[in-house]
Structures are given as structure tokens and as C-alpha cells.
Length: 531
Image (cartoon, rainbow, N blue to C red; front, side):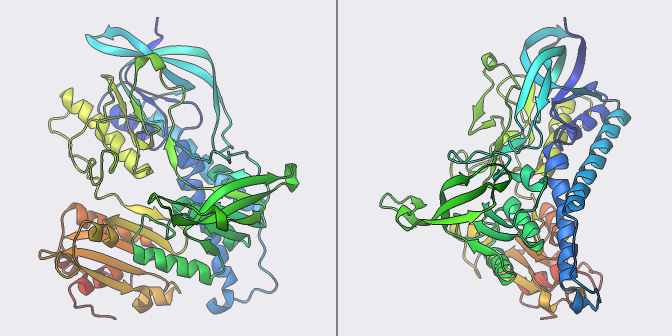
């Protein structure tokens, strides 16, 4: 017999899971969260938050390296304590982990440590169908990027009317290069290592790759970034990609775009081990497919290689295979449809969905259901999933507003920062839209912005793409200092279907970085003031 019954059991205590649990508790449900490792998930413990602590250190180091321009007199070389740099990051994660534990207690949510496995249907409770969940002892090797988990004996069994799977994602490696915790790194090894490598090859120039590349480069590591696409940060607007690559190359980072990895070979063992990475230019073959040209391969050598090539859903051990819970492309399948998975241009935008799986009463949210793999998306999906359950249970009297997936800000926290919302100009052109006929663009450079000049942050710009003839914001792209903060204004504007005229009519404080948004809106209408 089950030990306890809950209205809602959330499997996974990350930014999707714990937020969903809090909202469920607020709505009067009896809630439990089952987490096999630490509350806060990958984001809080090994991703979003501790990496930002490291990047803050890097930004400070960058300023100190430029101390003469700031009028600072510091005799001798500016040194640093690598262990303290890493430890500070871990302390930040630890503090926030304790914060989530407090939130569980505050909201009277049962926090259960263990690996949850949905084993089958349970006896109905109060006339409602229920699911049986075994809570197993579990050992997790958290400091390895793959975070292998070994479930053990069942500690207890609980039942739930509603189950929300929020187990997140895990980094992908390569068939010929698995994470080994020594020379072949993922993000966790890059974040928590005993010694700073002198040479680092970063494979993948997305947000994670460029953030760690910037961090290590700023502290003196020789960094080489290898990216198979034509540009770094390939999901961003082309103007941003080109400008960012120019800045990083100017500061001495080696960047190889249009380059694929053919092989990764570990040389030696232990502390003296190194790595050889064989790369080759990407070319179009006779079959029309893009692939590395092995005839032009080259071997790069480094102390470590960081694989930052993407993620996949993680749900190992979460359910009995006999249940037939549907999966696709290494993720759980729900009524949410990631853009492109059902064909070009197809996918969920702002439709009313429940995040339901093919099994009644079992839902899934966050990274485990597919892109966009973002913590803030997981949190909103968690809230919306619970609110739609509550609406059907008549706990709230209005149908929740759907999440608009075309208004999801994306952020990269290296320096300069990058942030965007909506469509890139490249996407609009691919859809057949014509500049000057269907849309116009306004760009305002930070080199003409008073606050940016005063703070020595002139690398970057704000770019706004507005539709014609009405002026709705189709996309916004910011590169530079505080970009990840500035994007909120444009996200809200796009969500409210505001026009550039309405941004122009909104007074922006002076001097601020936000003035670049105002000026870019003016520029999109051909009436920029300060450049």
C-alpha cells in the first residue's frame, strides 16, 4: 500500500519543477517534489547561476586588465586565486539551493529526496484516477556533466492524481568523444575543476560555448572555438554574430567557423593527459549535404576540450517502459510541438495546450519536452501547466493565458552580452519578406550612446526590426553591456503588440543604456537623433 497520496507530484526540482510545485501549493493542492540530486536542478546548481558568478569574475578581471584607461594605479601584475574563483561560484549555488529548500517549507511542499519512477496506475482516490510512484534511493555523480545516476532500493511509494515530469536535460557528447571528467569536458567540468588549463578547445559556439570561452580567455587560457556553422552564436541575428566574432578576435581568441570535428583523441592519462582534436572545413557534398572535408583535416592540440554542442531531454529511470509513455527525438512527447519538428515553420506558437503526455494525468514541462531549452521557459510552462489543471478542477474561474513562444527572450552572458527576442532578419528573408516593403530596420550603435561612452562599453548596438506599414516589432537584437537587462523592455513591447511609435512616445531616462532602444526605434522610422 502506498505510504502517502498527493494531488500533485512533481518529478524534478529544477526551475520548472519547483516553480510548478509552488504554484500548485498556492492553488490549494497537496504537493510533493521528488528530486534525485539537489533542489534547483542543473540551472541553479550547475548552469545558469554559478556560471554567471564566474562571468562576473571575468568581467572584473577584464576591467583590471584595462586599469590604466580607468585611471587605476596598481603596481605589479594583477593576480588571482583560481580556487577562490571557483569556490565563490559554488558558494553562490549553495546559497540558492538553500533558498529553494526554504521555499518548499514556506509553501508546505513535501520535498522528497530520491529517484522517482512511475510504475503504473494506482487505486482511484476520491473518485479520481491515480498513478503509483516508487521513490528509490539514488547515487548521482553530480560533478560529471553526464551526471550518471544509479537508483537503488525503493524507499517508499507515493500516489498522485497528477504527475508533472520536469527532469530537464543533459548535455550531448559525441559518439567518438564521451565526457570523461578529465580531458573531455562538459559544462560541469568547466565550472568545477581543480586547475586552470593553459589551452582549451571549445567545440560549439552557442551560448554555453561562448560564455565559457570568454571566461577562460579572460583569465589567460589560450582558447580556440570550433563551430560547424558559418557564424558563432548561430541562432542570433547575422549582424550580432559578425560583430561578436570581430570583438572576440580583436581580443585574441581564435575562432574557427565552418569547421567540423572529425575526431577527438586523448593522449596520456592522469594530470598530464592532453587532447588532440581533428577538424576539417565544412563543405557541401555531391548529395547536397554539409559535412567535414576529411581531405583537408587538421589536428589541434590542447589540455582540455569542452563539448558545448547542445542538450537532450533527460528522463532515465523516470517511468516503467511498459507504460508506453511516448518519446521523440530524445525527449518526452506532449501536446507542445517544438518549432520545426513537424515540418518547416510548424510548431506551437500561442495555442492553448496542457503539456499532457499520451498518458492521462501525466504531464511534462521544460527541457525534457524539447526546445527552447531555457530555464525561464520551463518556469512559465510549469505555472501554466498547473493553472490549466486548476482551471479544469474549477479552482480558478478563468482560462489561463497561453504562453507565446514567439516572445521568448534569449540571452548570452559573455561580455559583450547578447540578447534577442522575436525573429532575426535572416528568418524574415527566408520567409520571402523584403526590406523596405515588408519591414524596416533601425540600428543604434553604443559608440554614440552617452552612458556607454562614460562606462567604456561602446562595443555593441541595439537593432529593432519593425513591420510595415503598422510598425509592430518583429524582432529585437541587442549586443553590448547590459543587453540581457535591456531585452525585457522589447520583450514586453512585442508581447503587447506595441509599435515602434509607442516606444518612441515612451520617455527613456537619460543617461541610460535604455536610450539605445529609443534611438533604435527612431532609426527604424528614419528619424534617429543622436547618430
